[in-house]
Length: 221
Image (cartoon, rainbow, N blue to C red; front, side, top):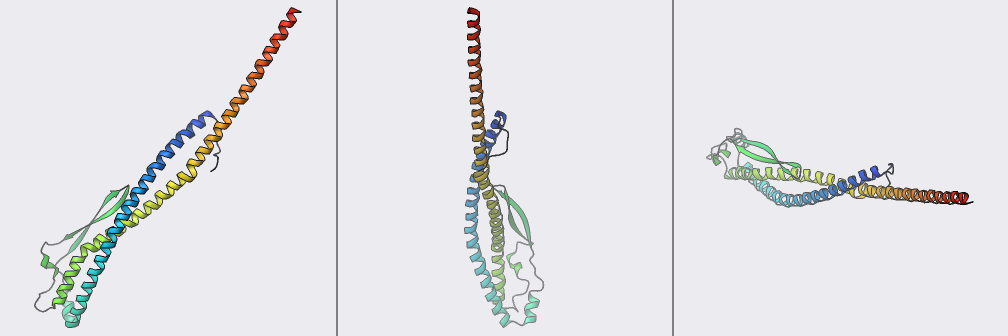
């Protein structure tokens, strides 16, 4: 808490009081924003944990089937089967606003709507384990993108929470106490000045009364 270097005048006092009102209002709004950001952040973190477990399990299953398929298929046959995919996947990136934070929104667009187009090979000369591996990867892809969206959102919200927290602390522990101390200092200075002026006026009045009394005494004499 420090007193600002300002002139102790009534105009400055009025200006600082207005700044204090604005700072207090801003402090409340920023605290509300911080609390809402924290609520949103914790919700995303919980969602993120579930998605991560689901994605990891899906990748483990896909890898397991792929390892088995590779053990029962020749490398040339496996490479040929996966060389020319039928299906293509595009990604559209948008965003949505959460408390002034733009977080990403991912949307998958496939070239065709046929679910069987994930298989780029004929089923006659390949292992069923390869089919299961491709199917598992196809199913886990939306969850992987949702996880990426969730983790990026959590990262952006965490950065905004930290920035908002610093602003709240600056207002709460620096600006507002400094304004209050300065307002108190100016008020005391103005009160002291008023008392000094009143004392001078009283002395001047006493002097005028004494002068009038002397003048009356001189005339009466």
